[in-house]
Amino acid sequence: TPPTTTTNTTTTTTTTTTTRTTLPEEISCIAYGDPHVITFDQARKIRELGMLTHEEMWRQAYTNLDAYITTFMDSGDYWLLKSPQISVQARYEGLGGVCEVAVGGPFLQGHVFRVSHQASIHITWDGEPVLPSYPGPEFSDEQGLIRASFIDVSYGDEFWDGVGARSPALELTLPFDVRMTIVMPRACRMSPFLTMRKQEGGQDGQCGKAEGDDKVNMSHWRVDHPDSLLSPKMLPLEAQRAVAAHDFHTTHASSRRMADGGSATEGIDVDLCIEGAQEEFAELCERVLNQTGNAIPMLFLEACKLDVCVGGPEMLAYTAMVASQVYQKVVAAAAGAALCEFAHPPGHSYIWDPTCSMGVLGCLADGKNIECRYCGFGPYESIPCR
Image 1 (cartoon, one colour):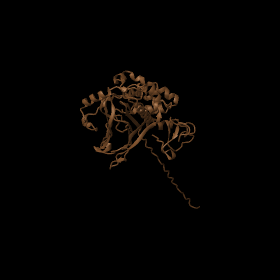
Image 2: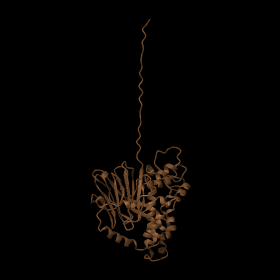
Image 3: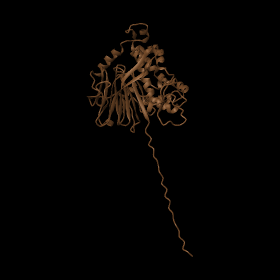
Image 4: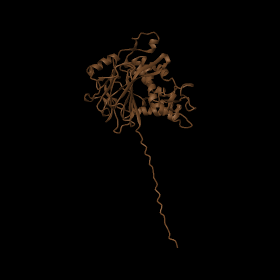
């Protein structure tokens, strides 16, 4: 009988585990006007509103207009953003127009980038002038912490009543995936748009915590002198306030009076604007903001009425430009993801653009919705995705 041979076979199975890293939520905060602040949580609400269908968006927008923009009328130096790593401060003058913005903190390794627009635009890195002329070349530091360059921001060429807006702006790219666009249409009318990831150690300031805190105590965030990143004041704060109060209590011509040939010195006292005289400008603001039938610009209606009453007709274009920037930076990509109807994932970037019309480059990207628009690649590279 032949011997029996037993063979043992060992099978080895290799299991591959793929770990996906989920990035923290991207959050945005904006300060503009006299001034108005859109906190992180309010910007999130605006983004979520823009993702709704047309009818539901309008229904929710008018349910609580005050939920989306906070009006803050005071002067002084305030924390826009305060976190363990990132510091952003703003100087408000008069009723609160933004005259200066400073960025610093450990994430910049102790360096300070400061932008001021009073008599002229003045930009410094650790107190040394950079970007001395507009448009000027790009600035970046030796350590690669910051990249800053001028761009032009515009809101169309012309719209209702011949109002149009074009402004220089500064784009900043910073560590920790922090981006900021500072629009600078004129002195003390700066509009910093801040976009970043939620911080591991949290964030606070006038931009809020990004944790559902709809109501932020704006006055609480005044900067104490030892913590200031902003330039030294030329006047004591109380003297500045007196000068600013005088300037802002100067009357401004209403567009209606000017259209009727009235004097530019005929106008409305700022106190009357606050008490309700801004309603004179409701129809004018609505015509300018409601150009596309999209509800997002109309969230700025109340702020527009007040700003035009206080600052004059040029604030129409300014408000429309800010509303356009907020839509582009906060809403467009998220709305595209929610509302475009591609049969198959396109593999390219796209947004939801309410200004689209038939024949415009990139529009009707999904073949179903005219507002669905390609952006940021190939022939559509000139169309910003955010």
